[in-house]
Image 1 (cartoon, rainbow, N blue to C red):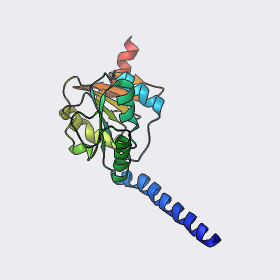
Image 2: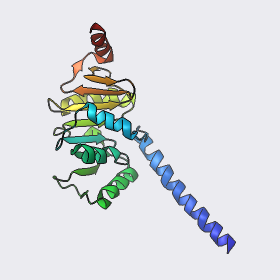
Image 3: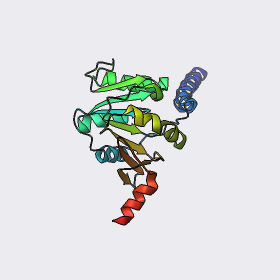
Length: 198
């Protein structure tokens, strides 16, 4: 009996380890490690871009969906998560489903998640983009993102700035950068030089 219980415990531990391993490893194939955004940091980011009710927010690399739920619940926005990792996509899809939010891709659904690569996603209807990217990806994606977004759209970058764009706002405590589209050239240096002049 003891051996059977031990075997069951080991089996459960192995399954949980496999799930955790897939959760952490699969995003590395896309060069985007899963690093969840703290709730207070996310809330500050959404306030910085002045997210309004019924605006459309895209979270590039939605992970566990926390940004989507916060945008919908606290700000009344519509939110679409783009997630390339199948495990994280499935987890977020299930969270949406069990909260009764219709994750099936209805155009009017307040929260959706899509299993896509954000480099190939049509973002032309976005009002706000939430991007927690690596430095290499911000460099690679900045020109494409500027072409995809409509004038007046806003981008929030967490931890790493878009090096060729001058931020419209910056939060030093949370390391958040906001940008208005179309982006102004000049990078962070231009932003800091402008702030010193005042």
